[in-house]
Amino acid sequence: MAAAAFGLACLAAGQGAAQARRTVLMDETHRLRPGDWSFTDLKVERPATLVQAEYQVATPGTRVRVLLLRPPELERYRRERRAAVLAATGIARAGKLAYLAREPGDYLLVVESADSDRHPAAEVRLRIELEPNRTARELPPGRKAAVVSVSLALFAALAFAACRALRMLARVRRWQP
Image 1: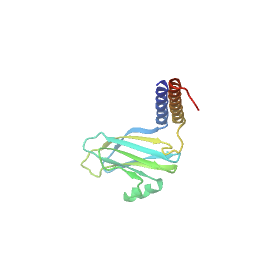
Image 2 (image 1 turned 60 degrees about the vertical axis):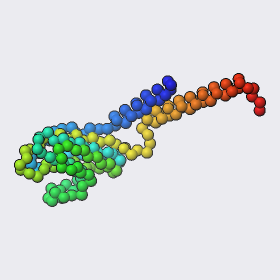
Image 3 (image 1 turned 180 degrees about the vertical axis):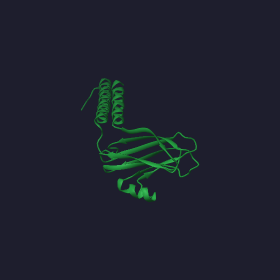
């Protein structure tokens, strides 16, 4: 039982280490006039990085949407409001965007206000996080240690139970090859 408890503690420590790798790039409030938009530069340094953005509109009656683009598409977005979008949310008061950036490089997160003069300026709280190596092929060191510890503990418990069962059998009747 102690070995199982130790294994679970190691597993929890490994999960905590995985959470620590997540980086918060931004947690700010933006003010957008009706029909206006702004963007934030994102630098993804490692392949297979999960880009997550979460937003909430504090101003009643206003809605926004969030888009993820590559930098060459920004000029096209400025002119036509159409671009090759990697990920987008719907127009809403709150939402989440998640995109697995398979290649490192520059990305842009665009926050766009709804197109209406009847609505007041939007106060948008935006939180952006990057979690590198989301699809890693190898376990992080903390989780790897937890898996090895739990495996060894279970093997030791099984070996102990088998040894005990064999000793009890040997006492009950003499072993004859």
